[in-house]
Image 1 (cartoon, one colour):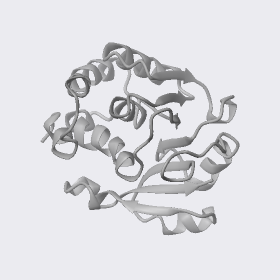
Image 2 (cartoon, rainbow, N blue to C red):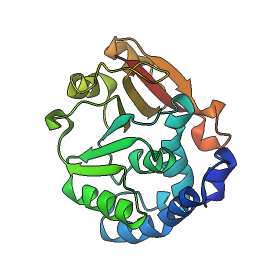
Image 3 (cartoon, rainbow, N blue to C red):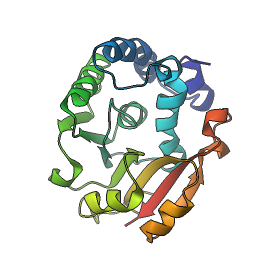
Image 4 (spheres, rainbow, N blue to C red):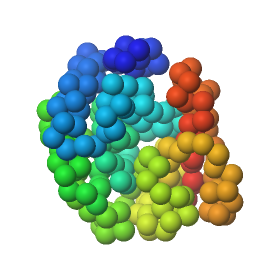
Length: 209
């Protein structure tokens, strides 16, 4: 399945508005990707599996409660932030990337689908001024340097089911990387939630603060 039915397979209770927003993503990303390359050419055909559903894997670990504030670091074209912002309309998402043209794509796509709970900023993570309940990201760098960028960006105000912290989408063998990190973490296999072969080695690394 290369269309929005892949999302409804795992998220059957979406509202009409959410279905419409998810449904618009293929055309929007196909258009913007032809102008500014934010998704690899072959992946644009598998957008719903490799980008949208992958992003939503975070929601299988953490159901954000209304009012949760989330920072997406190194968002690229808006992943995982845009799919999560559609899924959690009562939460606030702030997406940052150090490459300005990628933030342009995020802004254009989020405006086109009418996301009112998302802001985007051309900025490095270290320079973001606010605090957040959770930091999300998708494999922008190894966990140890990533932790260094954001360790003072997590608020102590706890009200979700998991302690505030990092929810990091990663793939492959993470043994060496997690040893290098040296801190507390939990690993969640996305293959426990999604049957597609793509998710066999995909994980969410949760680092509590």
